[in-house]
Image (cartoon, rainbow, N blue to C red; front, side, top):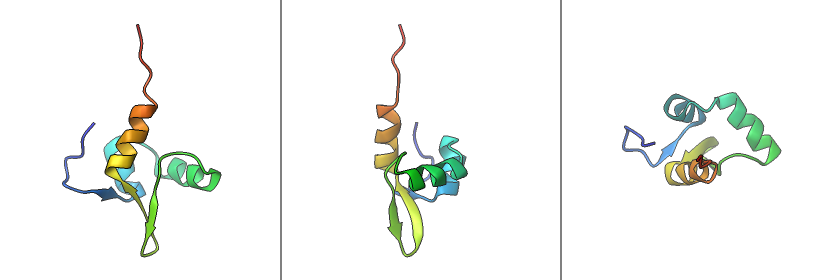
Amino acid sequence: MSIPLKRKALTPKQVEEVYNLDAGTLANWRVQGRGPEYVKHGGKILYLVDKLEAWLRRGSVRTI
């Protein structure tokens, strides 16, 4: 999965649009200490694309 935009960080809404991960679910996971790594910058929540994609790869399941 690759970002069509040349961005290094995405807001939760952008993550939702690009990766189809619900922004509300991301918020719940942040409260629970789960989900992909994120940073707070200037009061905004941002997901670094490389960290997000690494998190997604770790969750992949190989089928036979």
